[in-house]
Image (cartoon, rainbow, N blue to C red; front, side, top):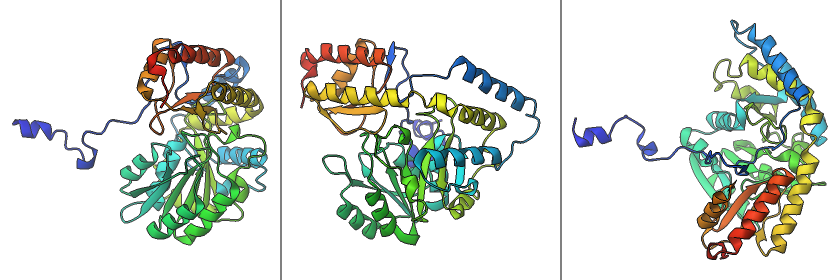
Length: 375
């Protein structure tokens, strides 16, 4: 085999050659604040109920699961209606998949594709262009304002110019933590019209501040609106891998065309239902994490850092002349955060009070060194 032939193996799609797979560093350190997990796991009682539900599902594994996951859709619809004051969210409006990543991919499979365009506004979630790439959807990224808000005039111009089939709007935004006001969502739904869908990604929706509404409240107004959620964050179910959405029933019906057969296992459905039965407990630490987040924002600003307003369970702060050196300095002290977002910024997840204190101490130590100098 020639060197040229060896370099061509395996016969990968050309546009994928040399691309590193997505993923945050997985390192065994004392304080892990890099992937926006809920630091509080389920109680022994909750874990026992989840295990029992999985056990009951296990004796049926010779049969395919309910491909419509009917009971789970009923439970998710009930939860969404209560959480956001969204009114009538019916089971027919709900869809679920293996994490919000698969939900997003299915949306791009159904509504994107060759000859179609997806847009968002940077800085934004780094997986969005990968969903577009994997579905052969053209990707266009507009820019956010300096405060990470969306300039509606510029956004409307981009929609008019590109005529996207899919608009992806994380709210709260990852990595900045900023939420979208309802009028911005409505304006973009109106601008897109019937030639596309507007997806508001509320993966961190339960962490929004008091008085910040959910886009779920707009579902009855805009039939092209899709609101996605996940059990990974506020529900402390990152290992569960259950994402879901609410939308017009015509949209959920369209997704069935591209979903893989029996894509949600019987165990996943059973565990998710058991977790929803314990929603008050699993969500019981959300208020505490909000307070910890707000206190962290205040602390970082008092220390002279630039900090983005956050409605999520993480904080984006900066700016650093050499953010990687700061990241490494924190890691050397046993604290792992995320090197992501605009140049010069870092993102830290909100952990327990003890973890946040460890982060503050480590950052203070790094700050005293030359590498801690800000841009």
